[in-house]
Image (cartoon, rainbow, N blue to C red; front, side, top):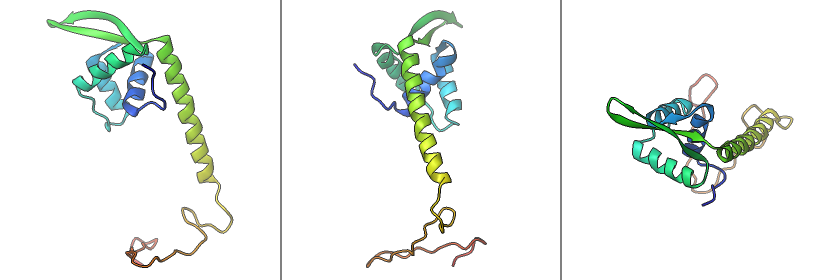
Length: 139
């Protein structure tokens, strides 16, 4: 099965977590949460399903296993193919961020920051929305 591009965020973050060193499931879950600023909380079933899929795609593989407090702890690592896919996706995202950053820096003459130089258009039946003054009050 081919890896879809662009990568979905959970896949991207799982591969990112494994880019530094082999990790076990709980370590990956914790690292993904940290990398996402707490926005993405993987459940074990979701993670192991993703790891199985990524393993089938050749992006990750089992590294080693150990028994800790009577429980099996399986470690996974990024393969060279996985590293190449993560590198390509990182570059794709970097180009997108740079394009957006350039567009945000360049504004047409006469345009206020964050605004347009055209007057707002009122469409028939449209709901009027209040505008905020710079002081925070309604206009």
